[in-house]
Image 1 (cartoon, rainbow, N blue to C red):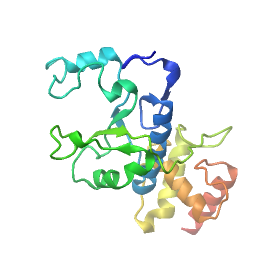
Image 2 (image 1 turned 45 degrees about the vertical axis):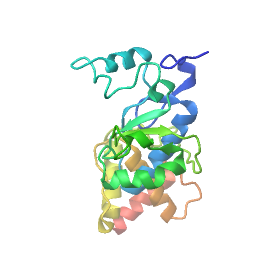
Image 3 (image 1 turned 135 degrees about the vertical axis):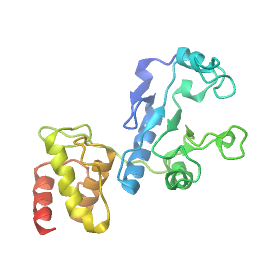
Length: 222
């Protein structure tokens, strides 16, 4: 039987937000990340996901080694140790921010909740800490590139040019993504938006030859 903070690697999966969670939680985190990117056109990021027992023990120690008992759960009791909790960045970690308010309104649809104790006035306020509720009502599939296609995880000059082309297409609508050469969730969401606007049946966020040709035509017309 697996213990808190001692889960087997086979039960965990990498997520697009960074770090590992249980397979079902990772699936819901990926789905949430796509919804976030579709709203804000940038990647959703985590600062902490699954924690081993050893890392939780270090975190529980007083500063400067860890955060201390007042800010860290007793080792063996944290939902991070079950791979079911995420500490988010991406401005979700600020009460009252647009991103935090969006999470409050939408996270539940994707199987995530802000526990009562972490809310404002909850006793131990942590805007960044969210846990899987296991009641996802919406799920999105994140597709990966194949062959010479561009998609999540791609990087380099071709991706940078793609990002610049998308920015040119959507400049009049006030949408802009970073042209950093890394195909992240923001780029993924904007490609999906482009495919949807063109009536593509396959809106997979992957830039193959057909999407690439359509983007080239749209750039000339922009």
